[in-house]
Each structure stands twice: as C-alpha cells, then as structure tokens.
Image (cartoon, rainbow, N blue to C red; front, top):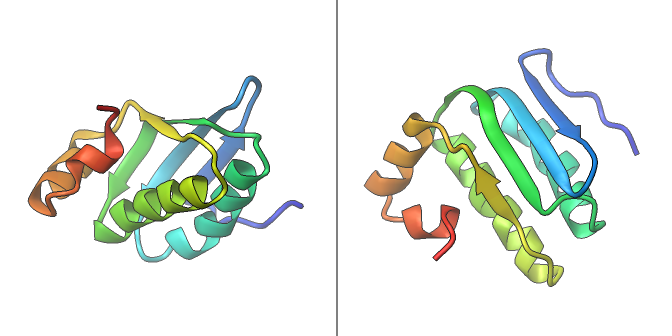
Length: 104
C-alpha cells in the first residue's frame, strides 16, 4: 500500500531488507512516516534503515525511531539503524535512550 509523504521526507524500501530515510524528521513529517515504516518492518520487507540522508531531526524524529523499534519487537522482527546523524545521536544521549538505537 502506497502512502503519500510530505515533500520534505522520503522512505525508500529497496532490496535485501534495506530502506533509506531522507529529509527532515520532525513533527510535520513523522506522523506520515510512522505507518509507512511500520508496514515495511512488520511485513518483513525492512530490517535495516539507513539514515545517512536525514538532513535534520527533532525529538519527534527520535520518537519515530523508537516507535519503529517497538513495532519490530512486537512483530518479532529485527531492526537496525545505520548512519545515524549526530543530531539524533545527541538527542538520544540527552534522553538516555542511545542504547536503543545502536546494537549492543
């Protein structure tokens, strides 16, 4: 099922279980991204998300990543983030949730 995303964000579920998230993860985009990611994760299409093209993020972007991890866990799927931008790493550190975003 294809969903319309705001023009400032992208979600490309490519081959081999990898997806690329791009643009700005903020309160104006995460509500549209949430179901797209959940569908890809729970459907078994995505196990790795590349965040190298994320240009900016706020705390709602961090909440989105945590929510996607929760959806993966609930569906007994694995999910790993690659190339987490420094801004998101800082937010995760301040929120004391950095261990959720990086493999142990």
